[in-house]
Image 1 (cartoon, helix red, strand yellow):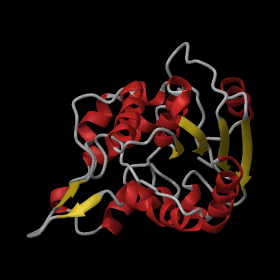
Image 2 (cartoon, one colour; image 1 turned 90 degrees about the vertical axis):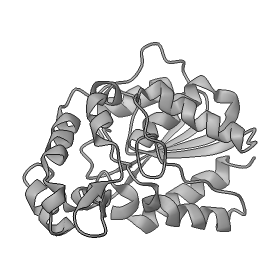
Image 3 (cartoon, one colour; image 1 turned 30 degrees about the horizontal axis):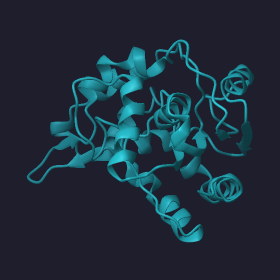
Image 4 (tube, one colour; image 1 turned 60 degrees about the horizontal axis):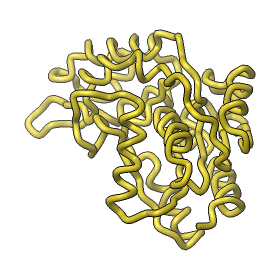
Length: 245
């Protein structure tokens, strides 16, 4: 999960298109400790779900459609489970309501924290340094979009790596005794993604009684960047069918 939906500008384009095509409002949110959102001392999955609901209530949204990629997908799953009255439909992108045992997230965070960003010359240099750890170039570039160049030299992270690295166990996990959701949901996953396994599809069906599943051929974990048009078509088709508020 772990996912690396660490900066919401990467989904602004499909969000704008959905708003225009379906004549609705669309909001792009960063998770806490990511991008433009607040940096907090904790990062439990249940808190991330509550953050979405808090935002919706601040905006006066009585019901909404929810789209989440990777960690945002886990957020979406939990909002559907704990606040079903608020969600019209949900699209969960390359993520499933499961616990991950892989240490990939922990290793990735450790590798990023070891980068000497004060003396880094370019994102390309950072990408080269991470190439052995993160094989897919699209994933490295996606993560490294969180590097912000500082005036006068050096770089800084847009995401709060220190806190994220402290909460990897919870982020990789999934709460126990989560209610089954009847929300109309689409699990949209990359055909070449390491996150999709047959048993995870089965688990998603168990947690989401009205779930649909669609593979995007040729896409890895970053589905909306690897196959943007196919991703958008699937997203729009589902929301046109189930997303009317």
